Length: 222
Image (cartoon, rainbow, N blue to C red; front, side, top):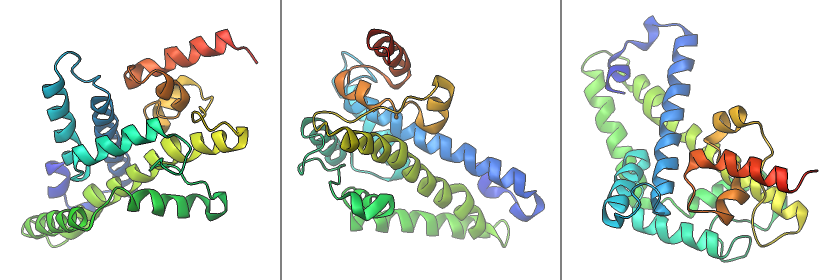
């Protein structure tokens, strides 16, 4: 990331910039997915203190998110999935994905966190501008855009689509799963779309979800 911040963006092609944004977005999403595994004690099994410290560090690197608050809300999401007590769920399908996204983000972003992020981005812009005049563009491309894209990626493939499947099926007990090939599931959101498998087997790490998805397909063929 530091190397990208020091680059002169206008000396590179749009393809290079697009690739940089996509790589940074994947990195951001991976940070959150790994922190999410920590919330279920998967990151360091048998060492809860280390597990949660790692999770807290990863969430901080992702977007300065407070780990304990996210941990509490995520476990409420599992405990009250699809109900009005589920912090990730929106029963009003009429507001569409954008309205649901705003509601979802408002539940996790605090004013203090937004101030911290803006202060960090401003500080990075000042530092990078000292190297070249377009340093503020680097912050937008390397920091701001990947975080926004990552949050949308996590929401769409890890919350919105699985829960829309749940709504259409009328099943309030657990979200649905996106029946995607493993390679596409990995690209969309590190297998977060295999959401029902995660809810029913939260002890599985993200990379173990495809095997569970295949096992269920064998047991319940269409």
